[in-house]
Amino acid sequence: MPLEIATLPCLADNYCFLVHSEDTGETALVDAPEAAPVLAELEKRRWQLSEIWLTHHHWDHVDATAEIKDATGARVIGARTDAHRLPPLNHALDDGEAFDFAGHRVVAFDVSGHTVGHIAFHIPDAQAVFTGDSLMALGCGRLFEGTPEQMWASLSRIAALPADTLVYSGHEYTATNARFALTIEPDNADLQARSRDIDAARAQDRPTVPSRLSLELATNPFLRANLPAVKAAVGMADSPDAAVFAEIRRRKDSF
Ligand code: ZN
Ligand code: FE
Image (cartoon, rainbow, N blue to C red):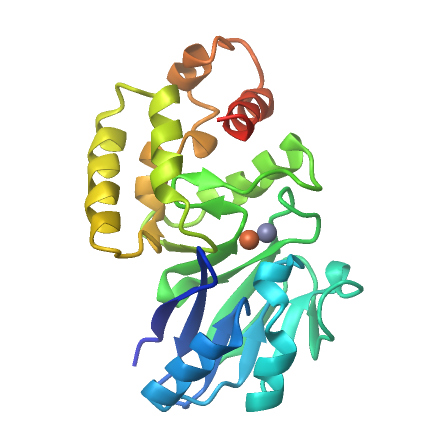
C-alpha cells in the first residue's frame, strides 16, 4: 500500500504532516508546531505515532515536540548539525543520510539558507519531499542565517528531484507569494493561472500545500533565477544565478 500523507494546519499559518503506512501501522509527523491538532488527528484516524521528523530549529516547527513525544512515545529525528538547538534527538541525521520508514527509503538532505542546518526529507517512492521553510509554495523562506548562495544551492538540490514530486512546505503564505511573483513575471501565463487557482482555494479555506514541483519550476521566481527572461526582468541579464536569486529575495523582504 502507498504511504498516506495528511496535511494539518497548525497555529496561524503553519502546516505539519502525518505520513502513515497502512502496511506496518507506523506513522511519522513532520514538524511539531502544536500538539492539540496532531493528537486529535491521530485519535480520529486511529493512527499511532512512531516518529517525529524535524526540518529546522524554529519554535513554530519544534515547540510541541516534547508534548507529542510524551503523549505517543515517538522517536525524534533531526539534523546532527542542529542537534545542539533542536529538542533531544533519538536519531541524528547527516547530510544525504537515508533511513527506512515502514519499508520506504527516506533521504534527508541539507537545505540551509533560511537557517543553517535546515534539512528536507525526500521519500522517492511516495513522490514526496518535506521542505519546511526552504522551498515553499511559490516562495522560499527568508534568509535568517544562511547566505543567498547557500539558499540557491539548496533550492537547486530540490529542483533536481523528479518533477512530479509533491512539495510539502511549512506555511500558508502562497497568496502573498503569488502577488509578489507577479511583480517579477507579470506575463508568465502559468503564474497567472496559478494565482487564480490560489485565490479560489483560499476563498474556500483550502490549503495550497502540497504543490507539484513541476508547477513550482514553472512559476516560483526563487527557482527561476537561472532563466534569461527572469534575469532580464530584474535588470541582471549578465549576473550569476545566485546573485539574481539574492536580488529577488531582497525585493521580497521589502514587499
Ligand atoms: Zn522557520
Ligand atoms: Fe516557519
